[in-house]
Image 1 (cartoon, rainbow, N blue to C red):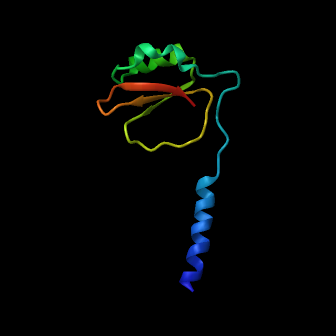
Image 2: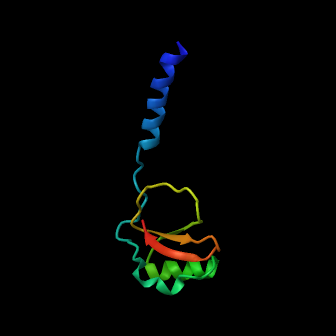
Image 3: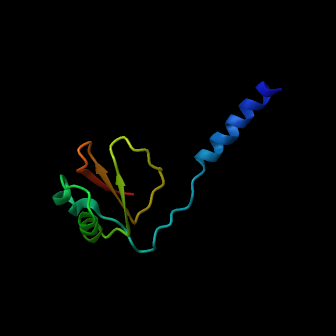
Length: 95
């Protein structure tokens, strides 16, 4: 009996994980990461985050540490700052 239930349960859970949620973007606000080259190599701080938000026009900033798992939802108003193993910004992308 359990062997018959496990595959069905696995498919149900897989489907739940694949479900996409609607983005919470603010209409008319989009991120532009092309102006952030000067922040590459800087350490994480509230001041750097504020500067990144100002330069990119992003509504929110997500710091992504090396090896960190993140959701794959796309938000046009969000800036993703990717940190290297040294804790410094390696790249910046919108989404």
